[in-house]
Image (tube, rainbow, N blue to C red; front, side, top):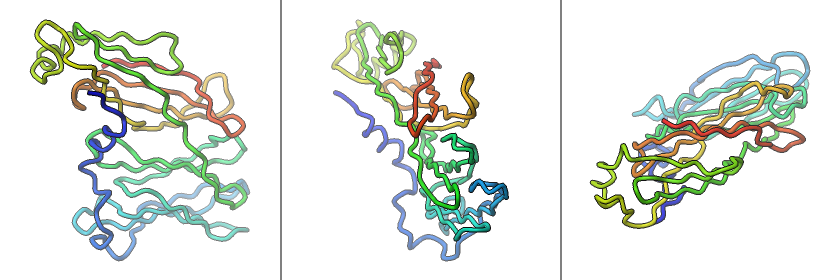
Length: 248
């Protein structure tokens, strides 16, 4: 029985508030955060205010989130974001055009620790979205004798995993027989990208993004490790600089 990432996404987001009707949201927006940072490149800090509509019964969750950017020489800019918990903005020149970009994040509230992200530039007062790095192609499968194989694009050879310490749980769950024979072809559970961190890239000018994806075994709580990918934007395209497997 094969399991694909889209199934995993549905499971992880099952307990989020993403489908709650706006009817239950508070009427008046709340000022969540305020920043003063130069995001247009004019040398002067713009006022950047993050607003949100909190739910009446879950005031830490914002059903609607947006930012308004005000400064001299351009009309007010508004950026609409995904709903979530703890929205925040970070600033760094990630497309390397000499002006800091705006990285938004908010927690989905799901059990997988996933976050919503969006990246924008407002250079010269003109709003433009910058696509985020795409997740790498990953192939995985459980093998006989309580083993698994993980093939990650960008790594020279597949990762061989010894999962014998989990064999009692895997037998109980029906994944394996007692003699270590796999009952049916099964893939590992691979999350979408959970987190992006802004990092300084060694040997390059400025900053890039490091992404983190969790890999689990029979169930989501059965965490095997994380895939860390460092990406750097050059000429409008994200290039993978490094990929690492971090076992748990």
